[in-house]
Amino acid sequence: MKNFKELIFDQSYINGQWVAGGTDKFKVMNPADGTLVSTVYDGDTLLVNDAIDSAHQALGAWKALSAKERSTIMYRWYELLIKNKEPLAILMTLECGKPLSESRGEVEYGASFIQWFAEEAKRADGDIIPGFTADRRVMVIKQPIGVVGVITPWNFPLAMITRKLGPALAVGCTVVVRPSEETPLSALAMVALADQAGFPAGVINVVVGTHAAETGKILCESPLVSKISFTGSTRVGQILTNQSVSTLKKLSLELGGNAPFIVFEDADIDAAVKGAVAGKFRFSGQTCVCVNRILIHEKIYDTFVERFVQAVSELKVGNGLDVGVNFGPLINKKAIERNEKFVADALSKGGKVLLGGKKQNEYFFLPTVIGDATADMEFAKEEIFGPIAPLFKFKTDEEAIQMANDTIYGLASYFYTNDLTRSWKVSEALEYGIVGINEGIISSESVPFGGVKYSGSGREGSHYGIDDYVELKYICVGNIK
Ligand code: ADP
Image (tube, rainbow, N blue to C red):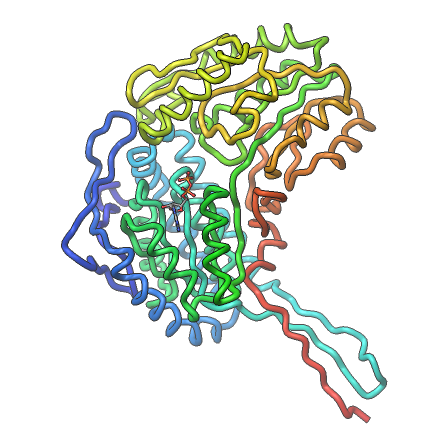
């Protein structure tokens, strides 16, 4: 295991080499206290074309390896990630503020995609279809889509990258990764471990810098890049889609969410409280599957609210590196202001602050519960991406479903009930890619993660996750007489 300082790098990684690209550097700040973590060479726009060329040149040899050979290298990378869980977690907490226990969990979760797809690599089976005439035979094979441009956000600095690289590398694609400028260190540390694992030069390239829009445009418009895989906001997903028109690029988009969390009158209230706290306040509410709206049956509203406020008040706010802290800072000042605006808007429309409701200082926004929330409040329509839990009341199942679906988004949804019929009916009626029943934590490498509506397209994880990175080829053999 390395010391975390040995895993700090400050250059982009292209064709197996560290490259600065220019002389300018940008700062990586600790969101918990505004201190400088490190500086990194600002090379994304300058280097992205070199990275694309490198990935393109490496493609032929990488896809020509047997699945087992690719799998072996991936497995070594998985083991190195796990072996270095602690330094990777420390680095992650330093650059994104996530409590250390969550960062450790993310390293395990992130690494699990490399392990899972190292296994799936060998199972990307094709098909034999009965010939459509007596003298024809038909086969279907899966081939790698090509060079993949990978653009990722800061909230899962490691796992959002491995979720895409796992399936891409497994089937023989090569990649150009552009991580968020807020969290380049985790990406560089993990690619250093990939280098150690023995990936051939050019298979994984990482460009770091602050020119997201220009770099994204180059990736989208390059004829050498066959696909873009993006996790981030719906707004940027739309920009990338527009920019990809000229090259008719394939896109996987994991975009914003507005997750409802419904508590029916027959629910186990304590379990629902526990699930709501976990689903809402993980990484201070800064994940795309975080609970956005809590809908509670009117008969149990008061009981739920009392227990929920009590549970939320027990969260320990602080620097993610400190022992026992399970609630860290927000990523930056903009995020604090956004949450302040949501609270002010809710109060102006009749909402009540039951807990928190304000920032603690310029880095932390307190865990917040807002009662008497209504559909006209901004946070009912938008993704909060922060630690505000709005509580809404409903009377009937139909009303709860209508409220839950009353959003442009469709990523994660949750509900609590002990009624079997209701659990089927509601699951089927929710317009979401993911439904958690009596469960607030739903992510795993073994499940297909993804959304519908404005939450994007494509699925990450599980055996379905391979599909986004392969092209089907149908081969017809004739004249078999
Ligand atoms: P978030 O709010 O989670 O940061 P964004 O969609 O703004 O979501 O950012 C997600 C990732 O996309 C980040 O790495 C960011 O730098 C990058 N990004 C932002 N704008 C663009 C753009 N116009 N083109 C390509 N990437 C972008």
